Image (cartoon, rainbow, N blue to C red; front, side):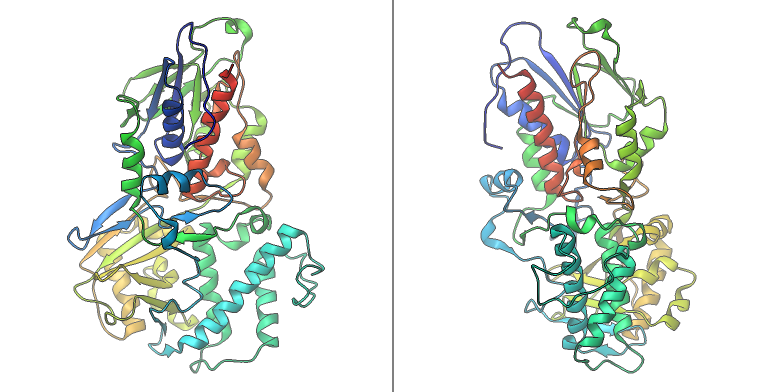
Length: 504
């Protein structure tokens, strides 16, 4: 978080800043404000609804505490074009770019062999599965680059054949273009009854996880606005250690946990424009009331959507353009689930198990429809714990299920694919969609939304005084939404915005 230093006037009463939300955006804002100003009486309070900070970044011990699993944010990305978060991590030895590798493990052979099964128990050859998965990935890359460059005529990438499918929305485009590419390519041998359609269906489940929503709900701008990470840190601290490192550098009493905000009363009248009396009051469910000159709201988009629907939360109501942006942008639904077993599912060699469903097999799980989207099991290091993800309505389904139903559902899946009955001994779930303090997993570009809505969401709101309400969080970042990098950078952005407002 190094960079330009700012200073406030050394005379007059202090300015009170309340930051709502103790995730990475709120932590970055609090850290920037408190570490940049050394000789100024700036009163900063960081209010977190949960008993602990971190927001959607949460690590849990697995395999008798020998390892940690990420229930929330799983990946730690490196972006060459945005270095504040990476600088913070590397300067504190929480990550090293020497251990960063391209985030392509699902499409390439990383040296640890993946194994691929059909739901009738047959194995798909590694080379065949990857051949068709790579085709899908290349079609997605094509869509991203063409949308970003507005290059539908393939001037830049002449090796791509021209297509007349660019008028289609993402779901229809990907399907039509994928099978166009498959038809023009050499066929690879697949088991009887298995076709490239089954590979495609699994990749659509993967895309659903990446966005937290069905492709039918996605706007094409998502493939041009989003900045793909350059690589991923593979050897790094877990997210709880990162959150702890930031929290420990905050001044005492800055972080106030178990403070659920229920109302933010700001002033849009000119009567207090010359007054030093804080124009904002933040009310918490525990009865605590905080006065503020500025409030930085860093809650998830899911919570903002709820607050926008409750007239009493923001009083007066937020401006129309802010409400429109909150309404138009999408909040994805998803959850991470760890299943612990008494032994490895296959053997110690295979870390990743990819699952491909045959249509007739899906009826076998009619009692547990959420389990029909299970497409991958990733072994955590050398433990007996496997990670998987669920998205959209499937996330809601497994979150609503009882623990016994989760065990039974996953056992039925494994019986189909592995032809043996295996019951997990433990299930750990990150239920973000049903969490009242999150209400979703990460934001996405819903149909009809785009970059300008994120700009509108990030724009400060003036009242009787300037910048009474500021907004941060991954949903407010124009190109790194859905990532912890975007959350961190947005908190830093709003802190600097406030500092620049007061600089002399």
